[in-house]
Image: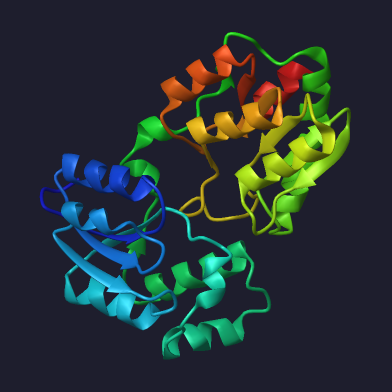
Length: 277
């Protein structure tokens, strides 16, 4: 990357914006952050060469900030809390965009926002450029691989999870004995896992996929120590997450937690699926 390249970042929740901002700085870039009130942590300003706080829905203000700052490329980093997203305050540009949409599910909305940003001459790039170490590796990541029953559930559930992703419903399903126990919607992965634990009590397989057909520039599936902690609470036994296209935060600690709880974790690709058959 050219020295002092100006990168715009739309910062959502969690630690991911901090990691991406640090990655941009490590690569010699300057970070211009749009932070979302009620979603982004206030400390993000420490990493910014310049920061603009907006309400969710102020798309025109977001674009103007980046253009006036001389930003060339933009990354999305961090999720938007979906239940909170109902408190959107659209400006004229966002309202016009929303009016044109047939659906306000994740894929449709994010693709429309990306197109609007890029129509203004800003190039949206993947945040993984700046944090490649967060990509989920392929294959079995824990000491224990999936058992025979867990393999059957992965093979059963994977195409179902992909189909639900194509329908823009969610990224995660929970399966046991070739039955879908829980499906993710607005509540997020952790609450989906907890619900499965209440329903079945023990031995579920958690499957998390990248939504087929979605842009790889935004909304990458993610897991980390909290995922493993919730799986332990729900007595789930295996996590299958799409390799390469998903984020694995604090992977060493999460894998250590999984090993101590006898939870199998596998990074799935088409090649891995074929090898499990």
